[in-house]
Length: 241
Image (cartoon, rainbow, N blue to C red):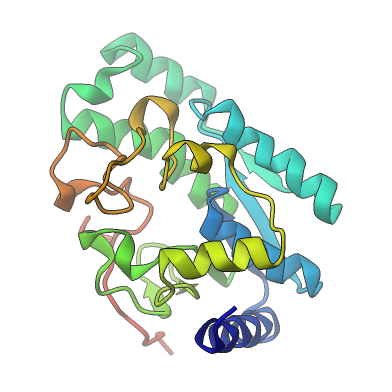
């Protein structure tokens, strides 16, 4: 590990300790990505009082779901898993079709809301703060990401502790600490979501180019990180009194 990465790792550990102490109860919303696995490793190796949960959209790759078992085996930790409401999924499929998200951005975002946003909102009930694995260089939609923000949509403090980490630094950490990760990463998948909405990236593309690749880059978010008016959340470190 480089001196820079050692410093960033120490900063990550200190930040997560502070979140656990000052913003309890807090939770990591894990997509089971390499980034989230870095945070998971710190939380579980140091025994921090931060809950870790994931969202099973019921359209995930088997390799993604295998990471849950890998976490249990490596750390002895059982993640909480939240799934979409069956009635909402059925209504969408009957009305629009199972893969209607290819037809328009509106239908894609409606599917994301059912399978990801609503389960996330349930998972965060009662939490004071939540943590993500977002990084600035993942996509143009995240270039202004701050380490600490205020999630006005949910009224919670939000932390993005890897905001200034590079992709190489994430993978250096994963290898240095032998952290479990999604096998799809070895097949060219740099950002992994639902199976029908994710493809491997090619040389020259940004990290999230394989997500909803049929849409414009500025629209490639699922709705988890938005303001109450629907705009993408930007840096907001202030917390209402």
